[in-house]
Image 1 (tube, rainbow, N blue to C red):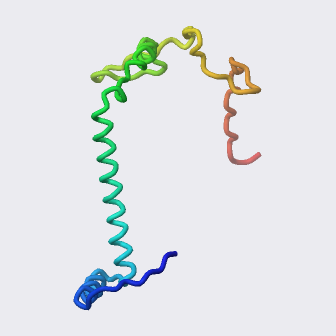
Image 2 (cartoon, rainbow, N blue to C red; image 1 turned 90 degrees about the vertical axis):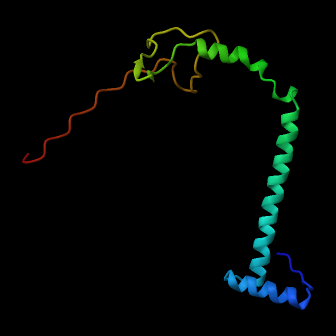
Image 3 (cartoon, rainbow, N blue to C red; image 1 turned 180 degrees about the vertical axis):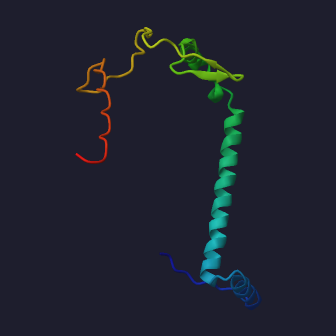
Length: 129
């Protein structure tokens, strides 16, 4: 916590007290609120300045290095069905072969082909036994 004393001319001090009272705040809370607003505005100006600097740097925006990887992803058949213009596009077959190096990771202690799950049990009938 930081403590300070403000030395203000009488008319400015009265204005500060009246304005804080009008906002239902103490003078301390009102000044803290004003400083928080100024801090947020300073951050916004700094961010705008940084984005303007980034926008001027064409080399920093070059994403051509990622085009090959994106092309590989687009070439893969979809894993789940999806809709295009109201029509369902089927997913790739479940037994499809993946491209080398794109196999999903196997968790330690699990086989890559888990055993099928047991069928769910029927609920018991309620009533007399």
